[in-house]
Image 1 (tube, rainbow, N blue to C red):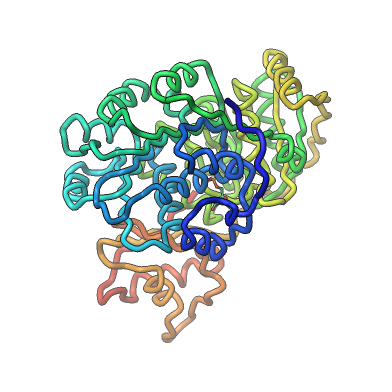
Image 2 (image 1 turned 45 degrees about the vertical axis):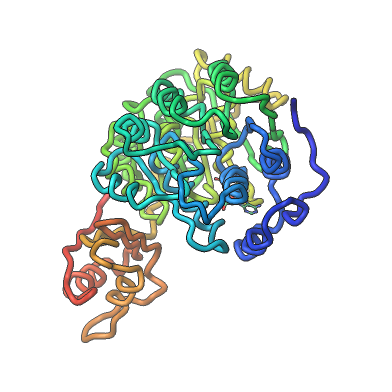
Length: 470
Ligand code: AMP
């Protein structure tokens, strides 16, 4: 069965608790996005739903609202669980659910992901939760050890199911799902629909409703350019020309492999570009830092693999470059969908060689458009200055566990004392993690900011600080 239309886009047309609806308007969600309008009525009716939802479509709020509506807050048991491919996505999902749940008191969301110590998670599980959000590997460990019991689960959500399979989580998913009650609602979100997804959905879902949102509306806002290159040497030269003719604040370059991601980043860095790399060979901690530094505008360019870029939470990128064409046209559409968000005009540029021409053909078929390669910009631009990031990041060796709060950091930076001070407008995003905090400051005030943070006190003590250079 396929759901194709919905009569109203107003959240009030749904059978949602009033408090949830009221909170949505405070979040600035005026009306449902297409995927919400199509999937919410089905999910709220208790049906299993397979939805094609990409990052940016509003999919998290779609399943988040269904989840909260179903939840019985007074029953302090694990009732719903969201499985995500990466820790970054799990963190984002948990954040969005907490935001949506603001109007409902005492909802406990617990994230369970790899890359963090096991022991404290057991402690948190002993305290109990309503909702679990996490990655399959770690959740599997917990269910096998018996530290996570899913007997009361009545809603299971697989987010970015295609990525979870790509990352080899199929066996972990099987092990987890085996330990959930059969009488449950299952929702599956995926950007693409390879055959494997169909097979899985058949085995774990009951008469699922398919929800698909057309990409055509979104695509209109993204201008796409394609450039033909002869070989890898010309590919890199073409990339430099493109970056120099498009001197934007934030761009992402997608590569198909981790090795190439690192190589392209290193070469761009050596050529004077403000750039960071993001791929799975980096330690989780470094990936978190990179995401944070790119989002706070401490680097103008991010070179990334598709999987690693899943954790990227930026409303609108100015430019997306496909260094190689994605292996699948739906992945291509997903990549370029990261630009042109929130009504802004986006730009996507793709490089391809003869070997990849057939992939361009597949994109033409998907978009129902003829693609005409353009001429590369002139090499004159190679002497242009490279756009530098306006901000830079300072790491502070103290976080939530040390009770450091954003206000303490801002306070220490802007405190009036003898000597120069930092103006609030030169302080950017402040992110406080468990044991570390990061603050973006305008490069022109870096030295003063470092001095203020290292000599000033926060929570009555001083913390070690470090400038993160590119
Ligand atoms: P997602 O596709 O879940 O990653 O969501 C993309 C962004 O859209 C997030 O920043 C959400 O907070 C936001 N969002 C979700 N639903 C709505 C809505 N109905 N109206 C406006 N923004 C929304």
